[in-house]
Image (tube, rainbow, N blue to C red; front, side, top):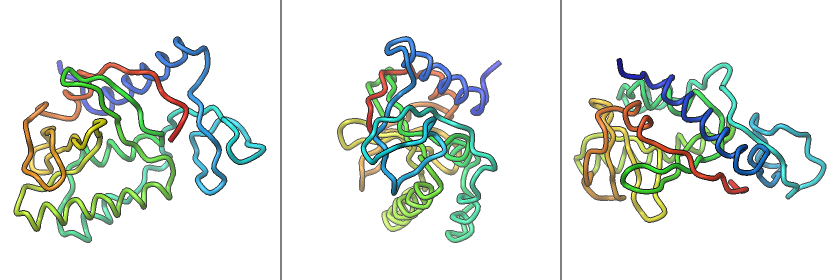
Length: 189
């Protein structure tokens, strides 16, 4: 029986935080920015720049941003990408895939969700202009490559900005996540 995306994502997030705690003895750290608050922060900050512990937290209730974005584009957005970005608030999480290291993208806060909306809109409009199948990014590499979910069928692809997809990485986002191993989380956003 294959995993569904919520189970795969929950399992990876749990593994990533457990791996970090095993390596460091504590939750990940991030410098506090008073203009960039997040539900992920576990402490009450005293001053800007102070290192605070954080961890991914479930969104309650999940954001409706994808319904609004899909309506604006007159394009229903694949359920998996909606679930990806609306299940957790989190800083990016590093991971290793059989093809190399990457950073999984999440939203840090409701304000970050609105920034994501603008970026996804730009990406989808560029795809439309290039007459390519719509895709939505969810991870990136150290270089200029990123991983996308093809909106039509939910398959995962490796892409470069402005280019046709390079290659298929998985049949689904759940299958892609099941291939990942967590890496140490650096103290920054």
